[in-house]
Length: 524
Image (cartoon, rainbow, N blue to C red; front, top):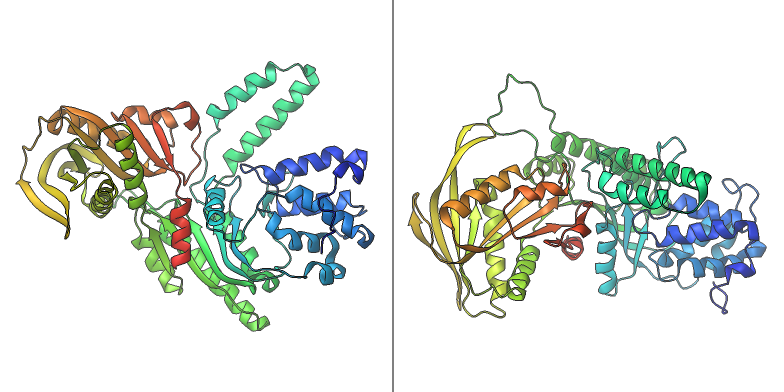
C-alpha cells in the first residue's frame, strides 16, 4: 500500500505556498486539546496533493504514492496513524481501494470525540488502550462553520472491523469565558515584537478561540449528532462490533432537589429527557437501517462515571433496550489516596472516613474497602473508622448542623473485611492525631464540602494532622479558587472535565480515569 522508502520529506513534494498549510495540519494532528477534524485533514491534504476542488474532487491518482508517504510522515506516532488506510481512501476515493485494502488489521479501540474541544480524558483513554497493546485510533469529527455553527463529518467508511468504537463526551457544558487561561496569553501577545498588525491578528484569533470554547464544550446536542453520524452511515456502522457511548460527566444528573417546594415551578429533569431523546434517536436509526439494508447494527451501550443519580437515566435507557452503567471510581481513588499516605509518611496514623448523607454511603463504603485493600500491600492488618453523620435540615438545601449518628470500625483480616459498630449516637470525637478522608462525586462551589469538613475538624477530629478530600468530577463552575473554601491539605480530582488553572496548584492531584473507563468498556 505504501512505498518502501517510508515517510516523504514534505519539502520535496509540497509546493512552497502550501508549506505553512502542511505545518498547520501537522500541529493539528498532534494537538490533543484541539485536534484536527476529519474534514480539515482530508480537505487540506487533497488541496496539497493537487485537487482543484477539494470538497468535490479527489486528489489525482498519479500522486498516490507521494500522498501515501506524505500522510505517513504526517501521522506517524499519532493516533491517526492507525486510520492511515481510511484517510488515503478519503483522499483518492474508489480507485484507491485495491491499494489501501491490502493486509488490514482490525481496530481494537476507535475513540471518537463527541464535543467541541475534547477533554484530556479522550486521549487518556487511548493511552490506556495503547498501553495494553490494543490497536487504538482517535478521530475528531466535530468542527464548525465560519459562523461557529457545529459541523460534524466522519469518515465515509471503515475499511475493516472496529471491535470497540467509543464516542466520548462529558455533557457538562462550558458557560463562561476561560479568564484564568486568557490573561497570560494576552500578556504574551502584548509583550511580543510582532508589531501592531501582528498583535491585533493574534488578539483576534485568541478571543475567537476563547469565545468558541465558552459557547461550545460539552452538550447533548453535539453528542447526539455524532452518534447519528456514526450509526446512520452503514458503510461505517456495519464495521463496528460494539458502540460504547461514554458520558464521563453526565450533565444535569443532579436534577430535582428532595423536598423542593412543588409550587415553585415545574423542573425539566435533563437526566430523563436527554436519555429519552438519545434513546428515541437510536431506535429510529436502527429502524431505518433495518428497512434500507441488511447491514449489521452494532451493539450499543451507554456508560457514565460515578453519576450523581444513576437511576433516572438507567430506567429511561432501559425502555429503549440500551444498557446503561455508571462506573465505580472508588478503587482508583483509594489507590491514589493510599499512595499519597505512604509517600507522606501518614499511612500508620488512625484513618477517619466521613459519610455526610445517606446518598454517599455506597460510595464511601466502596472507597473504605478499596482503601484497606490498597494499604494492606505495605501495612499489615490495616483499619479505619467511618463516621456516619445525620444532618439537621431546616428545609431543602439548608442545614442547621450535623450530629454523629454512629461510628464503625473497619478492619481487614485474613478472612476479609470486618465491620463493627463502636459508637451509637452523637458525641463521638477523638483526641488522637489522625487523617481525615472525604470522597464525593463532584466539587462545584465547594460550600457544602467546606462546611462539612470544618465541622469535623472542630468537633470530631481537632488534632487531625492531614485532611484529604477527593471527588470524581471537578465541575468548579466558579473556578478553581472554590477549593479554597475547603479546609483540606490535599485534593484528588478526576479528569472527567478540563480544569483551568490546575498547574498553578501544588495541593491537587488529578486522577486519570482512562484505565477505569477502558476496563468498563472491555467488560461490557
